[in-house]
Image (cartoon, rainbow, N blue to C red; front, side, top):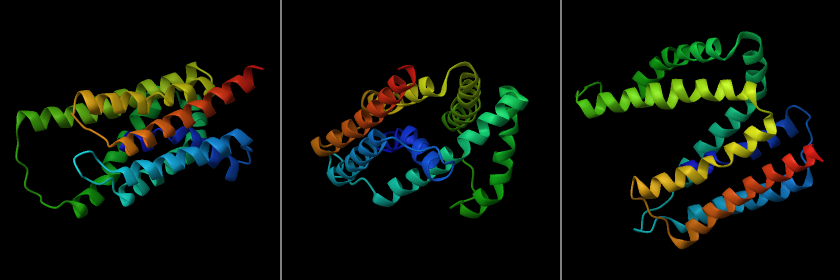
Length: 200
């Protein structure tokens, strides 16, 4: 569910561009956006197969994070072009230091129980999911057009859902699975139509 929400980012970039940067969205963006949000509603209402629930508040937080990401994407591209991807990625390390006071306030406990699994998990999150992923993303943004990157981003929820099923053993109800499919399809169609329009 979370990765499906993240997959909305290409549409969120379009809508933030429409309302903030005066880059008007096309009619198909609005249609696909409405379909995607309907899909999110189905995903949340469908819940999990084992009877668990998909939390509205959690989805809202992920949606707000996506809107924030969409809002900084354009300024980030300009900064990457000026200072280069390696310098920009390295500067993001300051974010972890700046977040430390908030992390300490929100921590449930200050007790640290060391284990090899925990250390490897932190290294994977810090190096693999953060530093390496953003380094590749920042380099890629300088190498391919925005419309191509938009199409590739729309594959993120597909890969995420497949990994959640195969690796984590997660299951969705039929209604939630239909909602996931609608969100992914709406995002992909919007990206495909945008790419087609720019190449026409």
